[in-house]
Image (cartoon, rainbow, N blue to C red; front, top):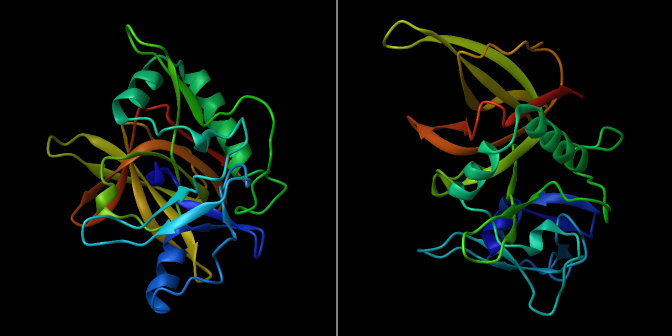
Length: 249
């Protein structure tokens, strides 16, 4: 269950932080994370308190909900994470317009335009775009969540082939390349701001789709896809051709 928490809400500064920041603190201070203890909460509802478990030789570090703490009724992160097969089945039954509406609803939650990137709306009401209803033949249907991952966070090889909603404020650039058969295809180059500069974070394979991009604009980007590594460089593969959305910030 802890794998879905890639970030947390910190009451110390009332902002979202990536899990790798907490891992770094643990390593640099020989396990002393007392400045965080009792102050890290669910990044969505901000009500459920989270506990940190450091990495071992066999497991990555993770966050989990304290047994004595409850999420809000509408919080997606109280549910089990969706599997790759389940999200593929779900997306395959959505039309392109429905998929875009879902992604825009996710962006409106994670990157509302009137607020900074790491300040999401708390306690939002209404249908939760991060949950889906998984239909199981001969068994009751169950609700599951789509785990999310900031494009600012570290991409770990252990996460390869796991499905996430990737999101962030980025710069984009279209890169043309030729296949072995001589076909023209395209990649989106994704840049995130690091130490005040826009640097390449990852790429997105787009096949024959040539996106209309202004490489000098800031974009909000949402992708439902999985990480794959090529020559040690991360690439995001979309679940479908429509499971990506970008809009000018």
